[in-house]
Each structure stands twice: as C-alpha cells, then as structure tokens.
Length: 196
Image 1 (cartoon, rainbow, N blue to C red):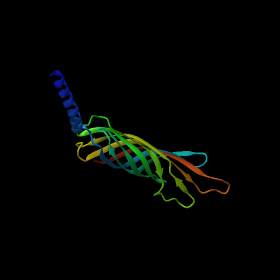
Image 2 (tube, rainbow, N blue to C red):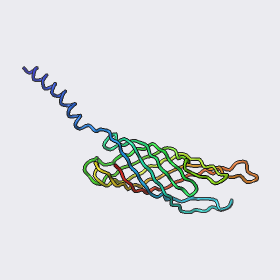
Image 3 (cartoon, helix red, strand yellow):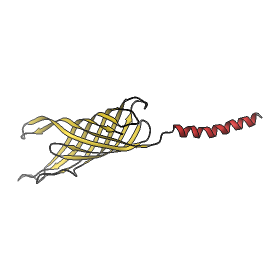
Image 4 (tube, rainbow, N blue to C red):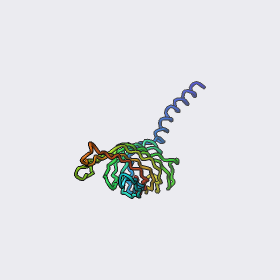
C-alpha cells in the first residue's frame, strides 16, 4: 500500500510540475523603445597650424530599439538611429541590450541599463565637393527610467555616453599627397521617448 501511495504521489508530482511551470513561465515578446533627444559635448579643432580652439556642441539624435524580451528583466535586439553632427549625418546600426535593475512588478517607475554597439554608416550624409566621409564604430552605454505600468506603454527618460568614430578625406592642397581627418565624437545623450 505504501508503494502504491508513493508511486501515485510521484506520478502527481510529475504531472503537476510541468503544468505549474507552464502557468508561471515567461513567454518572449516583442519590445520597442523609440527615443529623441540631444547630444552634448565639446570639440577641439585647429584654427591654424599653431593654435587650437575648443567649442561646445549640441546635436540632435533619434533612435529606435526593436527586440525580444527574453526574460522579465532582459531584452536583446537591434538599434537603428540618426545623429546630426555639425559636419556629418551618421546612421548607427547596433546590437542592443536592455536590462532592468529592479525586479519587474507592478511598480510605475523602473530603472534600466542599456548597451548598444555597432557601426555608424553615412548613408544619409551629403558631402561637399572634394570631401568623402566614412562612418566608424559606435559604443553607447547608458541608464534610464521607465515611467508607467509594465504591461502598458511607458514614458522613457535616459542618459547615455556615446562614442562614435568617423573619418573624412579632405581636398588636397598643392603640396599634399593625402589628407584624412579622423573624428571621434564623444557625447552625452539625453533622450525622451516611449516604450511598449
């Protein structure tokens, strides 16, 4: 009798565990974060061959992250954006990760981190005659807030650091063989947007 009760209890456990797991298992879903904002930074450039100058820059940025929410706290996907710098219009295409720092629940304010890395293309850039701008590698770690219920659309406020490389061939003077300008855009990005 004890063996029969033991086998029956064991059988019920084998049946109940998968049913319980199906009720509580997280199903991956599509996620989107679309943001618009401003890039803030300083630039050092040569005025003449002898002196340098430093000036502040404010540029416009926009990006959208589309991915899969693999776990309640983790999303993986791709980020596509546009950054309007004074001398170039770059379009970064990156792999992206979004990770919530707090346990998901019914809270209306959640903190998340982000990391995007990829390559900035010049598909939308128009160069003056004699110039040729090429894109380069991009990395952008950041932190942000989601405001709103987890099941609904959320308002996003984020702050990130963006390092973006580019280079430009410039017109040659009479005694020059080549003239390449290597650019590194180091910017703080402040963005507002929506997430669903």
